[in-house]
Length: 221
Image 1: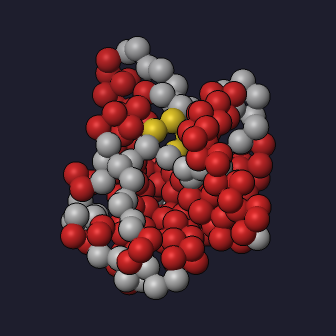
Image 2 (image 1 turned 120 degrees about the vertical axis):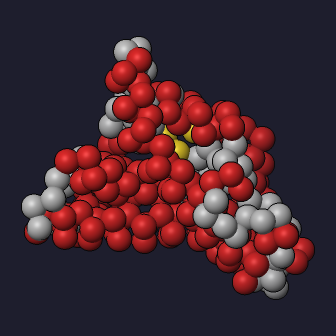
């Protein structure tokens, strides 16, 4: 799941502006989400679970990963999501640990992609390349970093919840996992609240700025 931020979720009524907005966002969204889900599927397969591989999810093909409603929502609203990668813990060698590692793979993949796009942005600046292409690269930096950080929030069904469950003692983990029933409502509540009170961006923005400075050499936000 990914929250719309820095105007990504702004409603646009002008048809021409809406078309240009979607053209710019489409490749960024499709790559970031597909790369995230591919990482989940790839690591699950490496750790012994072939479920995602058999479903054709080890792929950068967006059609393999995108949820029609969730993906369209990303263009118009302050949140969206992809189709979850199927993982069967019973195939994993060490179920709880490997399930957590599989969950962590998605955010790590986006972090790597964000750093890579940041370096590309730095190179473009060196060669004085600007315009639409530079804007696309910079948006890719922000999108991948935001996707990584948001999914690390330890609230089910976000990836960070799987990692926290592994780290918690078993007596606390069994209680924590009960949040799964309400987690999606908590997450959506945080995203909607963030539109007026920056409960997410107040910590995400400083981290993204730091990552941008490390990779691109400057704050892109």
